[in-house]
Image (tube, rainbow, N blue to C red; front, side):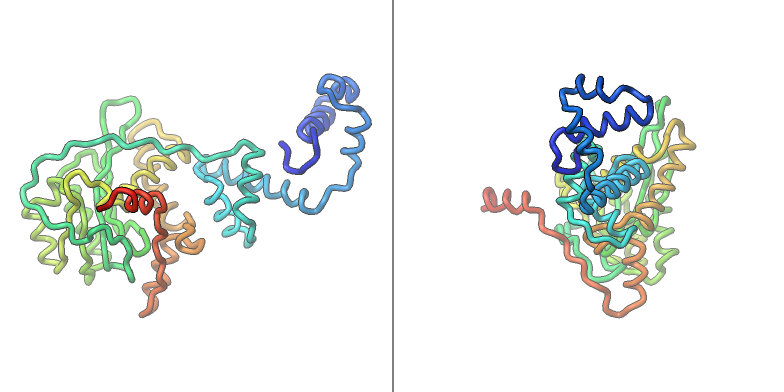
Length: 321
């Protein structure tokens, strides 16, 4: 590992380590690695700069957080987590440099499979229209169902969740072995139980549960307006699609999953972690539950703008008529 700017420092560190741990010959190691005996001792007895000492402290934090969170942290989130939990103000470039030296990087999210949807019973217009910004809690809710394969058996678990677009808190969720109307209806009922006066714009895809007349009656009885994604436009429900991607990327890295019981337990634990312990840069280093609690205690909730996606803006500028 070369955190400083000394040439051959990684070799010097290796020599020091093997000498201390296994008492290998320093002369032999210097000769084998092609460095001079005098240069090694000059490095060993040098006065270490304060910045380099701090780099090594940061490196230990990076190793700790990378292991604790199952290798899910890229350099931006690693910077956010270290600063949030340690009261520091390290720059992203510094954390990135040290992570590269340590060979630490985030796991890569896999592409989602394409799904074929059945012909819906009754549909609603896309009233949300990709406006995923909300000014306060319970103004806009988005929902969906995703599946998880149970290891070593030909079975699946289904997770239904309702996401508040203001703070990205899952206001309710239900885990089931069956993807049916009961799963979605129970998720909705739990959300209303938690927030009986909520009347948000309710957005979903065109899944059969959401297009059923029974579910639409539930929305009408609660005074909610319904919105649906267009066919073949999964980005119309971008926040929930992104939420599933985050779960499936990070959860499997953080927990040991080998059967249905451990999978259920992992989903429960991750949703708690996501809600209460996962700081987000958009929320100024706060977890979703912190943002929600602050907003519910004031008449003027803080605004958290959604950062523009430069790749999407570039695409629109090139291809939009």
